[in-house]
Image 1 (cartoon, rainbow, N blue to C red):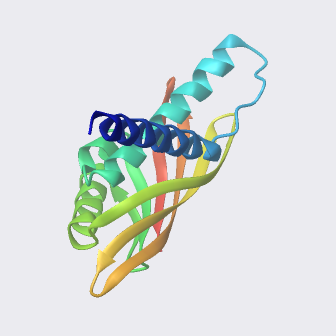
Image 2 (image 1 turned 180 degrees about the vertical axis):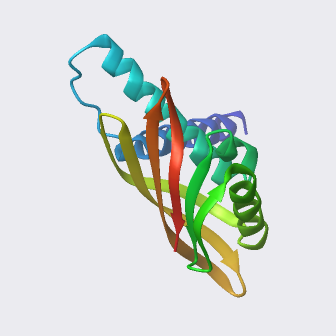
Length: 154
């Protein structure tokens, strides 16, 4: 019995380690010209990871803390436009309440100077099964912080 528990633990640890590594494939580290640039893009990556955690856990506060002023949203084509931070938070919260997340993951990213974006998938259950939406999120760099510029969920 003890051997079975150890096997299960090792299996779960290995599965988690593989999954954790796979989740990082979306971010391509570059050779940066300076330490300041490396720190800037590590902050960008951290921002994207926290936004993904917000979608994964349906916690709009993890996403909205990166709203600064106006945010462009395109949520299923029905909520499309530029919104202030409070309106954007309400729209994303309403979306996540209806489309209950199963998982959220990034697939690809791009970052340069003061702009970065990611492409990903938002998986949800509704009706008889699991479905997916394409997700794209862009950030802008201002005042030594990264802020959400756009969120598209279609």
